[in-house]
Length: 130
Length: 297
Image (cartoon, rainbow over all chains, first blue to last red; front, side):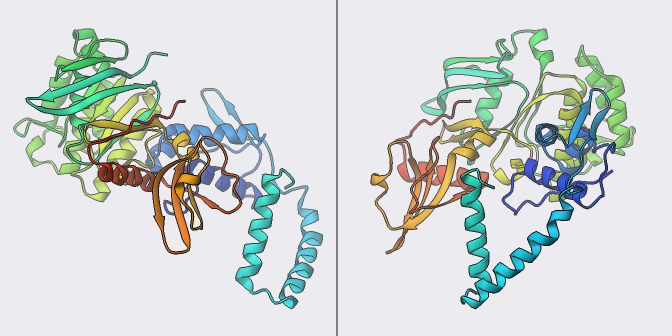
């Protein structure tokens, strides 16, 4: 079982924070297929958040195929993350390192690189490429 | 589904002063509704109209489809916790539970007992010797154990210290999760409500300024910053809530249901507190000339 926490100042909606934490736990192997997610009531009471927020996060995870609700029992992990794509991480990382080296040679500092990456990532996401 | 609270042109006047005017809203069931606004905005008046302790001067109000306090059946469906969580100082915790059982036909004695146990309140203790946080939780226990369909709370946490506040809200959210209650709670501090409310009513100077599901409100408000520009040149669908300018830059809070496409703007999401404050200062700036705004779900 994992325990959720919320960052009030992050600006990220609470339900998204819950989803991120489940996804993160799946990536790190803290959650595996078949594990039960914390009960809605317990999360609501523990974090003093609206139960609808928790339900929304769990529905989203269901939609992504990562979890499934068993009525009257709870919500369980049904998927995995990272497993099959881990192999691709290495080559992608090496490409990114080469790109970073080029960016530095072109005179970009850390902040400029980050800003460029984030804005490119965002516009790609908006165009539905990413 | 029947609305939890539905009002039409609702108003309440005390002598010459309108404490609430021209209030029209419809709150769907299943929400935790935050009723927010500065002091003396009319929050308590609206809640007292909903519980039937006040009668409207104008318009109508229905709670769960019925007239407030119309009879025992209606009273049993609505739980109410007044400001400062009133309990009887001379009565013990057990006396309060007996009183609750006696006065409420749908009393859930088992629920009341298990809550008192969990809260670690001793049954023999006089309510007058409880801390503020314990009083609030005893009062909440009474309100929840009556098994209402909607629970109305007037400034339930404003007099509590941060820890008691947190515990009270945890307790309340647990009750919501367990019993599927609808809740309407007022506060002049939006930060108290940010995590718990999924529906917002903003009341300023006796009028409803904003009402709608929180998620939708957040999705339709954007903080735009870019080169200095006259807000009057914005597209028709963008309503400016607040604007500030330097000699080069303009920062706007706009409400729009469309996407902001103008590449000159850097758009950022806005938090609930900032949004509410922008509306409140807009209303203060505009004085008596108020503007009604509604986000439809």
